[in-house]
Length: 330
Image 1 (tube, rainbow, N blue to C red):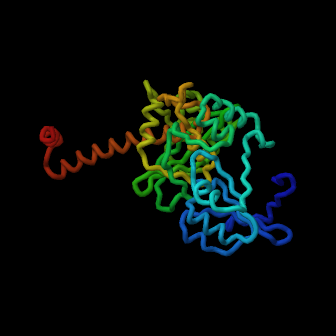
Image 2 (cartoon, one colour; image 1 turned 60 degrees about the horizontal axis):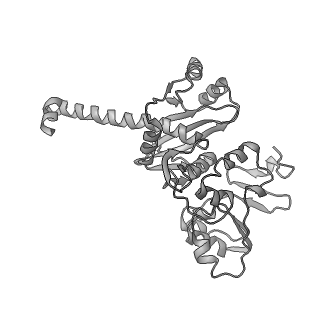
Image 3 (spheres, rainbow, N blue to C red; image 1 turned 180 degrees about the vertical axis):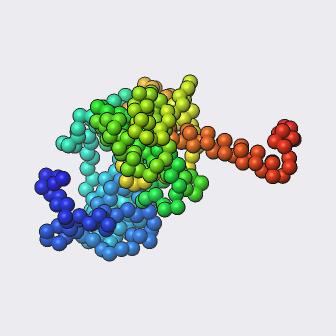
């Protein structure tokens, strides 16, 4: 892919995440989660993407070690160090507001996803008008964005949400690590047939797939290709109860899960005309999150079952019957 003639594949170093131009200047892509990482070599130009998610001590160190110019972007969902530390004290800042109307490359589907939120005053102030606001109706908060899945993490499930023309098909790998869950985006793509989904799953490490039960025909077809796939269980109020389960978990998400991170930041409760938050999630921006919920719901039940049978096994070893222990606990 040439990207309008600016990109030459042979100039990209995947290992170092560095692109080298013909004049030997370089463009380096790097993430910083610790202050010590910012003590690297100086640079001419710095671009801080999603600056509001970078701690101030790290950003300050990177800015200090930049010779010429610093660019930053963010969604103004809440006040952060730019407004409290930089804007009041520095006179060398050009501050402009850009919105979706300034994005010439915005496709029709993405535009539709933006416009569907016009009735949510909190969301529209920030993401529609680019004004400083506070999103109090976000459903999920507190997720950690990590560089990659640790080698010690254990793959537990894949979550699968079906899509085709307007909605993407999404596959999320769910790992268990150090008392929490790690989400890693494997597929986020429109127009995939069931055969393509099956072929993709076969390229991944083998594990149980939990898919949207609304498409039993698709599940049967994918299963016919030799894959271990099961439908999620849906019942009364299953979406809200599933959201509650996910909210209660310690969750990390890999930085390469760009669509998942976008959904996480934009998944909101519906707000009525009086700015009252309703206990009903907005629909449309939830494909990755639905796939995550399918997987985590089964893992939640599995952990409870394992705990129960572990206790039974321990009772047998101690010579105490499960019934006696149960009566004693009561």
